[in-house]
Image (cartoon, rainbow over all chains, first blue to last red; front, top):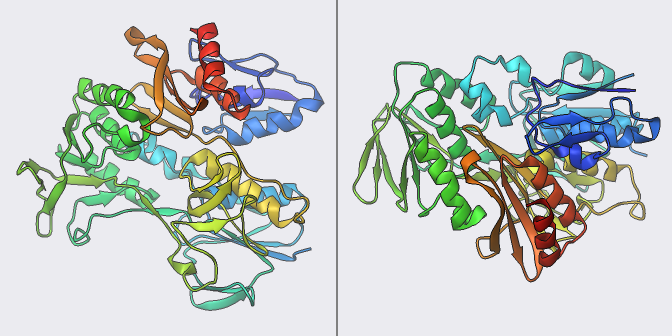
Length: 63
Length: 401
């Protein structure tokens, strides 16, 4: 699976970083960085939670 | 196993509940009932980007028709529930009796109104899509003078949006410092300055005496005698949970539908979102939240509770979290702060207009406030989830500071 972030929507709320810190990082510059664009299958549930809890619905998963 | 679950309230909590039931493998009938004409939509933009811009209401949708088909939901708009009977497991929808096996109450809250203003044109609250559409239209007609009554988060967001559009706007707030009942005085002052620096006028420490105008609003008279001219008044003085339809249902209603630690209000009945008051195990008291993230998460938790036995059920005990966007600042609070807490700014960058502050009491970290500091907010939120002490929080602050 591949992590896709719509950076036009992303507002750096950083909730994804708290749920999956190995995949997402909001740095001090206030921007979101995707640390792992193709996480392993065992990261799916955290990734799905990040997708659901993003207030801007800016994250999606491509299979 | 239930064969039919009814969800009353088709906003974020209700939609997330429906999604959770399906992803957990529930195969029965799901009814999703909303009392508005619109299908579920996202509310946070209503006081921000939607209000300011040209965004279409389709962009706010929480449920596309493809999604409704995929989840096999029976979605009904303009459907008002009443007369819940928890013994016979029935309720009335627009006056017709319907049965259910299990029920999710997600009727949310409504904006509190100023008394005796219903008949005056130009006085609005902001809660629904229709409210936002009306205010947006008024913002764009002529050059209205706007008064916002109530300097809470909604009021501050509306004022910021109006100001961004070049509209003359005044906030009237009964406390001396806006938001100080939530954030404390020090942080409240930072938000006040943000507004005054951007041209918003603040009238604080004074109550509204009267809204002037017969058919059309003309002004707002304050108790100190000041008369503020107004073509448009937006009232943001809090929200009231929508529980009236449950009054004779046998459920316990105390500023919300009272639930146990797992969101269960009665056998086979759960509540979620702004309408739900539940025993939060972590805080050792019952709370009710009006946050986007809570509506989403509690909707899911409550729905799953209906599919679990008592032994399987988990307590719902999140660290609350919300955000507010005002001007170029993202204000985020995680935890529960109180004006009596110790408050310490742990990372300060006044030149950049951003900081991180933490709240503590009884040796515990209680909350974190970030202004354009989302990274720190989430880091301290994680500390709270691990029940960090005040000292641990201060030590962590030194590491990042």
